[in-house]
Image (tube, rainbow, N blue to C red; front, top):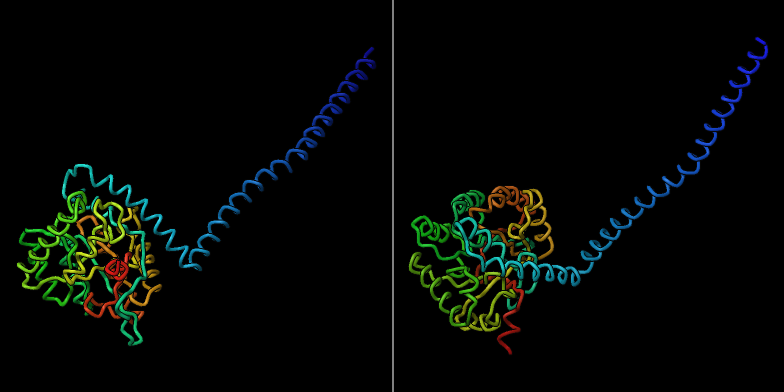
Length: 337
């Protein structure tokens, strides 16, 4: 009896071991089936991501290799930005910094142009760079002037109308430092400025007369808020351009920028990289930057930019009668119509 019981026990153990072995074998078999499937899914996802990255790189390379398509894409981005900015400008502004930020962001900052007309770059074997600052004066203006003067450089300040004593002092310091004091409208208020040709003319005469009254120098250079090809204006920009031509005033857009008014926050290094990339593209780069209290990063970037330009042995100077015109809409295409 005891012997039979022992045999039964051993048989049960043998059966249990067989079942365990079968289970292990089944699990291993499932693992062999599922593992390749899982790996295939992972590889498929990774390949999809790689293909997307490769397409982006190809598109970027194609844009750089083909200037026409690159500029077209930039213009599309600019127009989209302008549309959004036009809506923003209609909102009531709560404080001065908010107003500066909204107005700056309405600039057509993604659009670039290499249009030159009437003048050729100075042929001295060096790159002539024109740094321009819109929307000032601001709390940063004095620091910008000191930095430029320290490095023996001049720039162009497209200023708006401000009547406080500090701003008046800055207008005069710009002139006294050998820089170019230029006009960027008196009000910088898009709905008012661009409501009609008469309102544009009124604003123009107001800023020109005001600068001459404060500094004794009549300004002869202008930058349209939003650029000459902006889509916010209710009046035809061609009419505004013809008016400036009759007044003997040259207007300047830009063909390089640091991105400080694109509605996106760039780091100082990113802004520097964008600026230098634009500078390298053109013989006479006109660099768009902004001089407002909200543009702290532009002030922080400036010493690094100056160092880079010095390394390039570039001539950094203000816009004058020898500066090639950089215009999104050429004046020559308008006055001949």
